[in-house]
Image 1 (cartoon, rainbow, N blue to C red):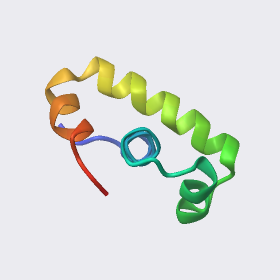
Image 2: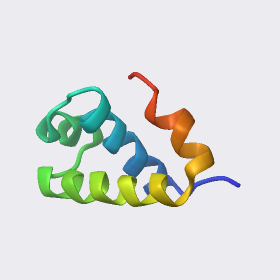
Image 3: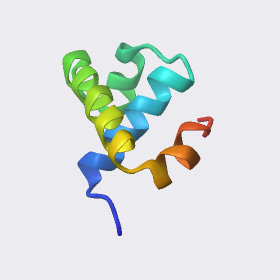
Length: 64
């Protein structure tokens, strides 16, 4: 099952911030978003990965 683009961005933001130590402002600039939007994406990415454990294991070990 494919993820909608907003879900993919949420997971990407979550991995960038939580796994790779990027600052929200850096991710915001790269994605052309505001820092508060990235904060919401990171939270959303957490929920997505919590709900999809089979994807979570592979995705959270990724490096950008």
